[in-house]
Image 1 (cartoon, rainbow, N blue to C red):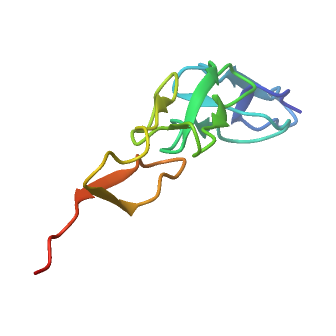
Image 2: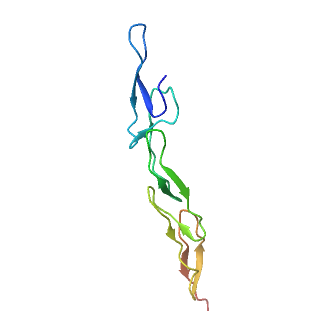
Length: 112
């Protein structure tokens, strides 16, 4: 059996032992034992940020932005961005902020 953080590259036979190789922990990891392949390391998605590097036994650690005071619109980032303040006078909120997008303000239209 190959341990966590490794992959089996050669199954055992009656004449040869099982051969396991480590996952590199940078582009691949494996959190389960006895697997033939490593899993690809993934970037933190928009709406979240990275808090821990990947290891041979763990994918990157990500936490969500709260969508109230902070957001992140790009993958693979190490922090959230502050959400813009409420819209200024003469502007209306066209889109509320979310964990992956900022508040959008547009000028109010004057009607006569």
